[in-house]
Structure formats: C-alpha cells, structure tokens
Image (cartoon, rainbow, N blue to C red; front, side, top):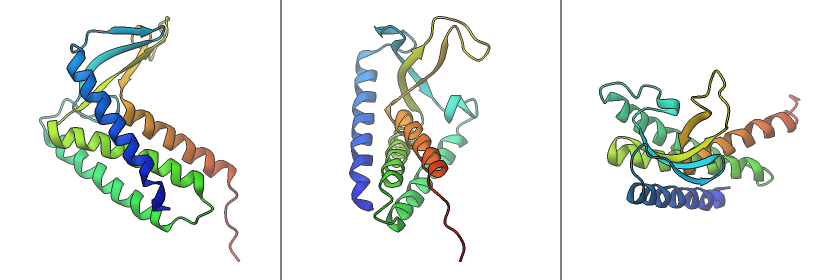
Length: 163
C-alpha cells in the first residue's frame, strides 16, 4: 500500500507552503481574523503537542526530530505490510506520515514548529484560554485526522480470530 504515500507528499507540500505563507505574511502572536471562530495567528512551538517540553534548553529539538523520523520509518514499514483491502488504514497512516514529516522538517531546519491556525469559541471553559484551545498547522490537522481514522477503523473492524 505504498502507493498511498502520495497523500503524505501532498500533506507535506501543503503544510510547508502554508507555513511559509504564514511566516511571510503574519506578525508573531498578532491575530488576523479570517472568519468567525478562525484566526491566523503566527506562533512557534519549540516542544511537542501543546508545547510539551517547549521550555527545555534545546535537547528536545533533536529528540523530536529523531522521534518524528523514527515514527515515519515505522509507518512506511507498516504501509508496506498492509493488505490491499486495508484502504482506510493506508490513507490514515499516510496522513499521519505526512504530518510527522512536515513537523519534522520544521524542527530539523529551524528547531521549532510553525503554527498559525487558531480556532476559538466565544466562551471561556476551564481548559480554554479565552475560548482559544491551541494554535496549530496543516501537519497537526493531518496527524489528528489520521489518528482519529485509525481509532475508528480499530473499533469497527472485527479482530482476527485465532485458529
């Protein structure tokens, strides 16, 4: 099912192009309203999801670069082992792969991930900051969609019975 790697390539290209456009056109931490509940807000993440380990002194850069490319290698291996009937698994893995490579490229080149998609709601909840959840990017969206699809597939696909 390596034929689905083209999905990963599209994700990486869209991710890198959108990040380049964000850096070229936005000021850091200055929201630009796009539509209700969506701003473009340039932010940099030196850690992982939700800035996990972002306050460290730099070792996390190489840890996350290594992790993203190790996970990417495993996903390629997994894709290669998939049966032709596992279409949605291949698409899901390709989305995760594209996102991992997109964010891995950022960390490798600049030591940080560029984020700019800022969805929000107009009320404050205990886990939201004035209605803002997190700022993220196309790679994060692809990883999230791919991971959700993998969970759904695992829930609806019957497990193989041992003979």
